[in-house]
Image (tube, rainbow, N blue to C red; front, side, top):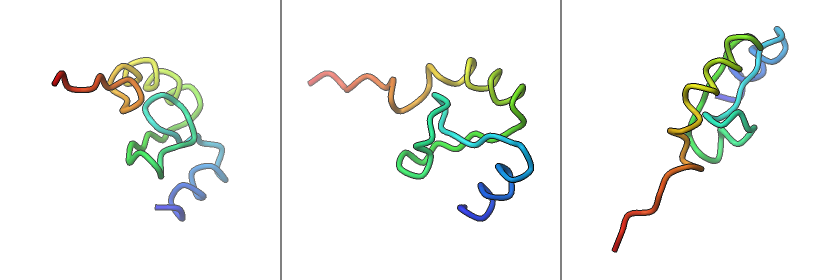
Length: 58
C-alpha cells in the first residue's frame, strides 16, 4: 500500500483517512484523490471515520 500512496502523492494527489488525516496506515481507512476531490470526499466521509465512531453502550 505504501508504494501506491507514494505514486499518488508524487503525482500531486492526497492520501489520508476519512477525516483527512495522515493516519490511514494505522486505521485502515484509505482515501485518495486529487486535492479538490479529496476535500469533497473528506467532507462526505468524515462522519464515518473510526475517529468519530461512538463506543458501544455496555
